[in-house]
Image (cartoon, rainbow, N blue to C red; front, side):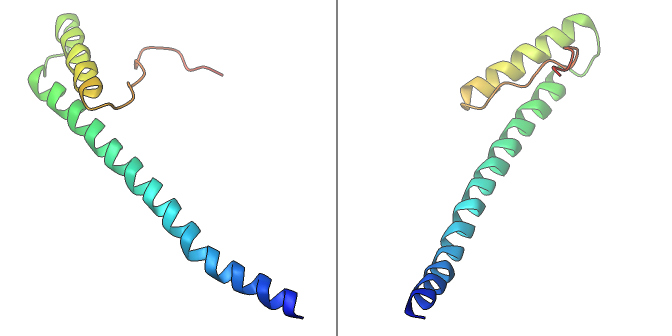
Length: 83
């Protein structure tokens, strides 16, 4: 009986700690996504045309912005999906 009470107390104690850890990771992921999205918006605003030259410049600016903020690079949109 005492073992069950100790196990229940441990579970009750661990649930908030685990929830906080998941939430902190989720918040960091959302902050990274928002920063990545701001880079993409800035690149689109700087080079709004859809010519080959503007696309290349937009991609270069996006890569530079992501690298400057230590964010992961985005995959190319024209690259085939890996199975």
